[in-house]
Image (cartoon, rainbow, N blue to C red; front, side):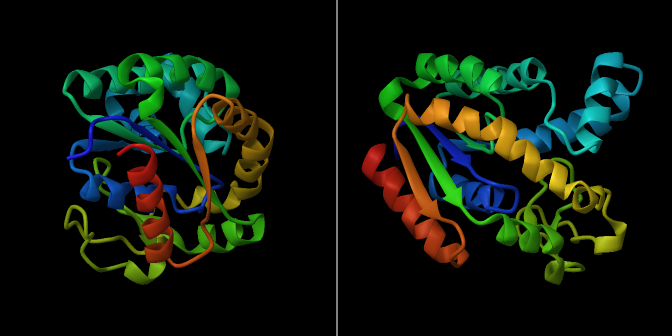
Length: 230
């Protein structure tokens, strides 16, 4: 079993970060996939927070297709980092940190919990054209505790992760993402790329061609992890 550490999957929307994170969590069972976007979605749609002005502010930001307030997001991630590290588990972050301010908060915590030598950044590279194409086909499991990413071809079939039936595209609550796609792509270029540059200068970083078949991408990711974190 691999010693705990942190794996950061970065890339454009549709690059396959979530898909590969689910696969990695199965391959390395002492690593936990923490989907920052999924956690934000759960928080801003949870009826328990319907009267919380701070969460409702984040809800408005989220559904506008913009990146949420960095200090709020970093707080969610750091909370989970401490929790999993205390349990002796590694963490897989898919798409986080998304802003430079988040990166400056999360990076020191990663080093504190796992040590600099146990942190690896994996960049899944695809073109914006490919990101658009994939995003139009993408759906996720409607189970808020699962949110397994798949394609519209899987609608009506059991989710391979939790078993719940994958909804039809028209039944999804996330169709707004298509209408906000250009905003999300612009946010990546303007706010996430600086965070990625910050990470590149502090931790080993491997760039992977994410446009290939899922199995090919996973094979290269696994090799990178076993090389850098063995």
